[in-house]
Length: 391
Image: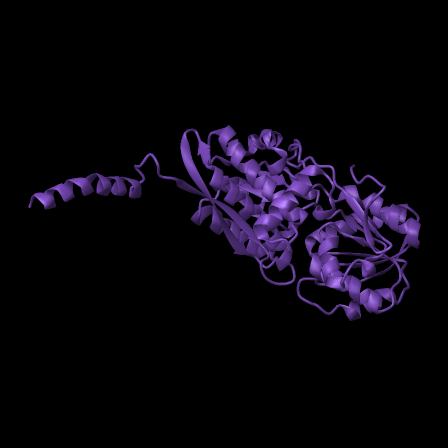
């Protein structure tokens, strides 16, 4: 009898503590803040979408390990990821679900079509849109709860035109993807090419995300004997377009939109030889800055020595760290406007280990302030471009 009583008294505080914790009354309980993601996790752009998601999850893991304290209260971050198959309509559905069902203060979307669809309502529904797209219109729209993560692609256009035209000639064939981002890139590239004295000899946009056989489309463009091919979309299908162009006898250069990454393309083409004469974004693994090299090393420790991070991974990784820091500065995990107001300060306060691409802040339109890096393939080797891509 006494044993029962003693046991009962010993268990009672534990039971009460457990009940309090389950009811949210424990001082040690952590509340979960969910971060939304809607991007392509299947189809031709799946690798691109997963690279973004990997960056988000890597940062969340580090933040949770270190502990997130906002105004004396402990929080745990959790990523809720939904596949939108690169469809803007699906992006909008997913974002509404994330904001309404999961109460996400921020939703990451990595393609312009989806971003524009979500910008139609994110201000009204009061969540921060973390927009991974280099399309300038993302911030020109004036959406006060949007942040454009990468630098705008317009900084790449003139160096791409000058470099490829000087080395190969003035005749360009257009073989871009057919989604909104590629259309915007093409609309900027063509006038710049013509202004430099070049001509567009052929054009055939293709659905990069729904096909792996581009021979017929590539053949039509090559029939006009271009000196340069303008290509771009997700890395894997872009690499297939380049590979099939070489197999059909194309000897010229490639101007490659910033979504495609040269190192990922080289895995598909069996090295850089097929990509000779290409100009594109400098792969993160070839970036010689100490912050980038440290991030690559950290990434490989966590994901395997045979895996390389991309700029999508690093940029989105940085933005989650900035988001957590902005929550601390704002004193809120759910006031999107207050968090947005502190994002530039948060980025400036991040150590280089959490900011491998050295994003220095957010401009007055909501765009990240970054100096982009450009690479070319010469002699089968990846080299930094002599032309500064900043603009």
